[in-house]
Length: 475
Image (cartoon, rainbow, N blue to C red; front, top):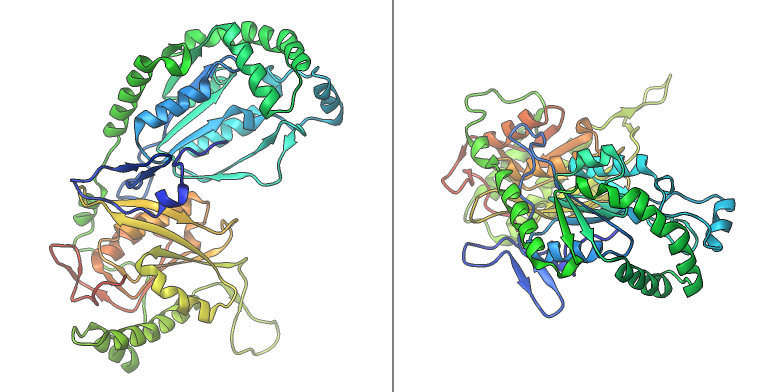
């Protein structure tokens, strides 16, 4: 698999949203750095309203499918594009089959050589916006490597392979089907160069395999599927007319799928009572005193940081009291023992990161993830720019941290990301120092089983959607 989000993934992920006068990407000699995040892929109810746009690329071996895919990605100029290769889904060979492959007597071009069940399931989940794991096939050992690739967040999926059109379920997942038609002699030359340099084959073995398996498979399984294609691209990556046509169609499809979520949130929950999933820290004299200090505009920076940390510690301890627990049987016991699989903290950057020290102080061995969500200055919509989550968090209880929640748009996106990674909704705890009523309603309405925990709830937002009276801006 090859993830074509950017030549330098880390630079792309850490970029910020730009205004109207700046382009959505920057180009250097060797890098393309995207500055646009992923817009909402869900509606005001928190449910996915649009699926990824899937482009299927089919063609004979070494016909130039990957080159065409790269040309499309380059011309699209959009982030969050995934290039998925069918080669990743070859079946693991038995010892007998490995012996045949070593003598170039195993047919890798037959439909039976691919794990279509895993392929269909993976592409379905990826199209639905879920996080998936992609196998990495080793052509030297003819087996799958131990570490699989994690892929998430595709707006456009380009799926390429010699038998992309051979399965009916795969065809139903494709929004556009492209067949790359290249002369057989050119394909043979390309295959010789690729298999010798990249896959450790010898010339005699490559030619033997081509004549015995590759050419007959093309005539029997691949060439007849050309009639299923929406577009046939002769000459592969050199046909810029066809590539421009494809790019124009994809752009038009992406524009039709846009939606303004934040505008819907602003009027969706007016005059509703606060939800039962909300828990506000008890208003003790200490808590009221801390709020008085951090809400005072004349409070010094050092005092603001000091007293905010004290309040965060109280908030985290309060949040942990909602975790499932057990006590020894037959004895009186003061205290609790956590009975879940694990606890993971996820901070919504940048402000949520300020709450990490309080969580680490209480849970010494907690795993930490990060999600960067920023508001697009043009549309006002939240956009996902970066995420780094610990492995295998689907069974964990997740403490989602953000210092303030106003409209709830960013918190809603963060929860949706966790659900896409198979975290159970009732195991998500949204923890914030201060929330507006609108933000509380937004999250509770979309995700009724998420526990919402805060120290205070303010009623109003100003014209810039800041909480009133609020506690200022964390950064």
